[in-house]
Length: 479
Ligand code: DUC
Ligand code: ZN
Ligand code: ZN
Ligand code: ZN
Image (cartoon, rainbow, N blue to C red):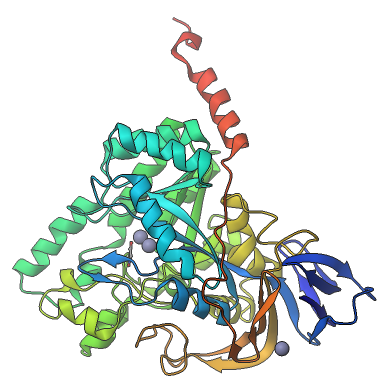
């Protein structure tokens, strides 16, 4: 099957130009004007619209078994909803239980993900440490296309990585040329503050942000930046939600460290007042970690994106229905943490970013797609409109509007954190590996059509780190 996207304007991370895009065999086969194409080609008229690389969400948790339940969007429903919103690739997380072999967890997640409608790949979490973890990291990086490992500095007594694990895993990442990523929150502080809230009788969702104030995130971000410096490794911090962690990144980058930051569509646009609602379902529906912050933090996050200290946008898509959230009715620490968003990220970033003059269209493409492809070594197969790239494309209608609602969204969850927002700018078509999977409101997602994306490790980082350790070797120190 071949398709021609005609009469539109191509927008990539670095330029904007008038061209038609021809896709064949799942790849972009030609870009230009007056292309000579087979008569049987299906034509998409993109007049007045933008042709951009499909979104890449670097942070999702489909069907994640977490906090005594399982996230309600599975790999099929979640990726299908992503296609409806213009996202064509996800990076999800393999999260082994402490003591579980990494390879076993990896095989389990690969199995679950076979039903994906869009392409997918995995960060693998390091939740504990021993020699088998070290060995499995090598197998994953060398044989299975895993070039990033995740570390939770929070969730004490569950999946939290202590400093020993961080240091040893970061060291291993350097050997392998893999990118360490972290959820930066001081897990001990969170735990103690949660206990204090409960002791004071503050048991509702309003206690959630009080137990995870910005300094909890700032402490962990500053710590991990220093650990990364000591280990000579780049590091990627997921869901930066506040000034405190943004400042840690900004400082480290100014001193020449390769530190990268991700920000969620929710943290850019929703503030902490949601937790003070008297409606439990509403307040609990927003419980995720880190929590939503005050408005001054949101402004700082936009500035971080504009100034280049934050690089990617994500959702941390991890949805739980009202009934699941109700497990924490009498104790906020039992509310499953997570919110949905995969379907809405692009529209929110366009409406609050491009329409409000905070992002150029090219910056929009960079932060919703291209930067993630580059950081996790999928570029230019993903994140680009170029000949030979995967035909993962979103045709964006900047004039069309949509009112976001759980009543009409495609995500398998009965709540939407952006409920009632009308956004201007929506995908008219989404193309995934050369197939039209979303066409003017009609979802044609296909169960199992998504493929696993193999990501090679990073030789350049590896070499740079090796050169650095050469300089810092004890023998090189004059006595
Ligand atoms: N935060 C969430 O809100 N959900 C999943 C995991 C996480 O870190
Ligand atoms: Zn997290
Ligand atoms: Zn997450
Ligand atoms: Zn169509």
